[in-house]
Length: 376
View 1 (tube, rainbow, N blue to C red):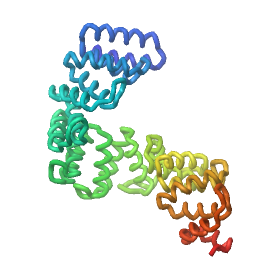
View 2 (view 1 turned 180 degrees about the horizontal axis):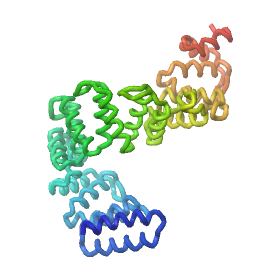
View 3 (view 1 turned 60 degrees about the horizontal axis):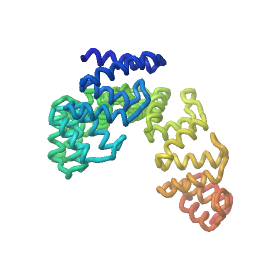
View 4 (view 1 turned 45 degrees about the vertical axis):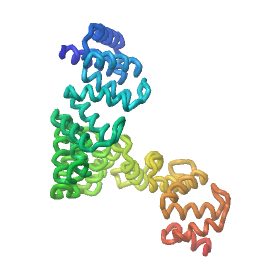
């Protein structure tokens, strides 16, 4: 039957490219096998509906098939049904139900669910927090060569949970996870090697791991590799084009640091490598600002104040300056002071404006305004 499932997945992928008739034939064939009592087909059909692979996404249908497989003893079906309960997908959210099904799966040696059991014990989901039990299940998952099993054993050593804290031991487990192509672990190994945690600092090896994480399209991996190209670290030559490429991939993956740095690159322009583009800069700053990055909020406020890349809007500028200043950004406070002083975008309050500007008097732009307007 194994070949049949590989065949099914392959054809479903083809179906997604627009061949609806093939999609219907394959799903119907899979259903017939599932209805015959084949638990692997039942669990796979649950995946098809949960992901929306060639059919409209439908978690209710997914739960139906996962439950059918789970009740027949399939560890995959049990694990996936537990996941649906843990996350409240088409069923009432219940950690108690989740751990019940996770345990059934884990006790059959299903590595992914052994890792889930570890998570439940570590974080006290449906059961009391017990780091020793968590570590036991993570180790069992690692013995099954599950990449997140390795990763979580490493985290336990890194944090000193149920074991003596040890970066040396942690990086060993992270490397095992990274070798199993876990992108998160690959990025962690790179970071530890770059900064000398658990092993001698080695930026060249760090770059190697960042590249592996980036190949797996990990946003953090892309961000760190972009940083290495930007500054010419780890044996790499400074290359702003490559840096921008990796920052873009990281930014689109939601990495807030990459969004901010890319915003700076677009705002200022870097020779012929990155063309100055205020609209792109504003877009990147907005993405980072929405994640509460205070410097991005301040820069977005400035673009709104000047009308660069966005419509000049003092009210919007004040909004972002206020958010950044609330997090301690002095420049944003000074700019907000200027707006209060002149009553632009906010109700005029010269006293408040004066106080805010004087706190930021060391900032050249604010200092120039203070001198020009005789603010004391």
